[in-house]
Length: 430
Image (cartoon, rainbow, N blue to C red; front, side):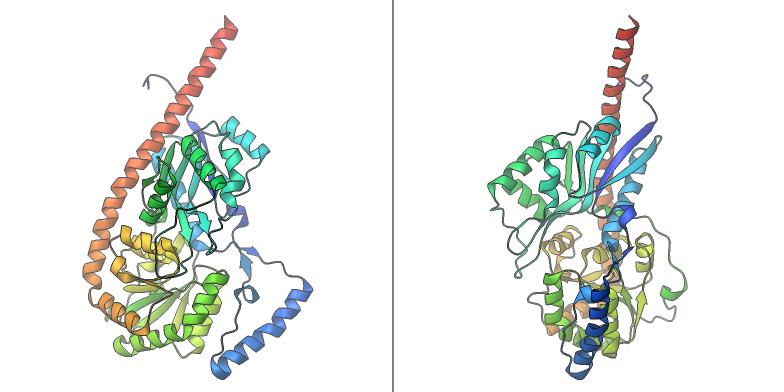
C-alpha cells in the first residue's frame, strides 16, 4: 500500500450481532390472558416448592424482559472496543444488524457503505440435541455471499447442547448446510472462532480458513465496582454463583440438579463460611437466585449492566458457574471458576484457558465431585489466578495479531476503492 495515498478517515463497520442495541432488555409484552395465567401459576409453583421441593417452575412465567443475555451484550461491547483499537486514527461508525435478519435493503447499504462486515462473536452456529441448526446462518447465507466488503468472523463458535458428558461435536451434517459452510469459507476474509471444538468441527466439515482465537469478551474493559461487592479486608471468602436457566434443555438440567446444587452450596457454606453473590446474566436468573435464597442460603444478587459485569467479578475470590460468559468475564477479572457445563462450548473455553480440570458435565456431575473440585479450587485460588493472568496475556498476543490483520483488510479495501474512484474521476475529466 502506498503510504502517500490519503485514504478517507471515516469508516463504516457493520456488526452482525445476536442482540442489537435497539432490542436490549425490551419489556416483555403480555396479553391479558398470559398476565392472568402468570398470576395463577406463580403461587402454585412456590407452593409446590415450599411444600415438598417439587420443581415445576418455567422460565417463561417469570421473565420480565427479552433480549437480556448479558454475555451476548458483553461480546458486542468488547468487539466495538477492540475494533476501535484496531482502527485507531479513523472515525468509526458502527451499524448493527441482527443474526438471521439480513435482507436486500441491508445488503445494499452494506455494499454501498461498509468498510467491514463483522459477525460479532457468540454462538452463531447452534445445534439442538437433534442436530438441527438454528436458522440464523442459513437465512443469512445468500446475503453473505453477495457482500463486496471484507467479511470477518470475530470470536464466534459452534454451540451444541450436551446430551451426555461427551464434548466432541459430530461433523455429520446435512449436505445443504455443508455446502453453505463451504461457500462461506470461500467468501470470508478472516475466520477466527472461539474454542477448539468449534475449530475441529469446521475443519472436519472441510473448511480451510477457520483459526483458533478466543471469545472477545475476555478483553472487555472495566473498572472496579464499589461498595456492595468490595472484598472483605478481614479475609472472608467471597464466592460468586451463576446457574443457567434459559431454554427448555437448560431448564430441564437445572430441574434435575437443583437439589444437588443447594446441597453443594450448603456444604461449601458450612466448610468456608463465605459470602455468596449471585451474578445475573439473563432475566430468568432472578428466579434462580430467589429459589436458592428460599432454601436458606444467604445470597446477595449482583444485578449490573453488561458493561460493568467484569468489574463486579474482580470483587470475588472464586466462582461456580454455568453460563459461559460468567466464566469468561471472571477469567477477564483473573478469578478462577468451576464450570458446570451444559454445552460443548463450556469445555472448549476451559481447555483454551487451561482450566479443563475445573469443568464438569451438568449431565453426569455428582455432589461429591462438586464439593471436591470446589474445595480444591478454593485452596489453589491464588496460584490459579496467577495462571489465568499469564494465559490471558498469551491470548492477547493472538488477538492483537488478528486485529492487525483486520486493519490491513480494511485499509487495503479502502485504498482499492479510493484508487478506483480516482481513476473514474480522472477518466471523466479526460
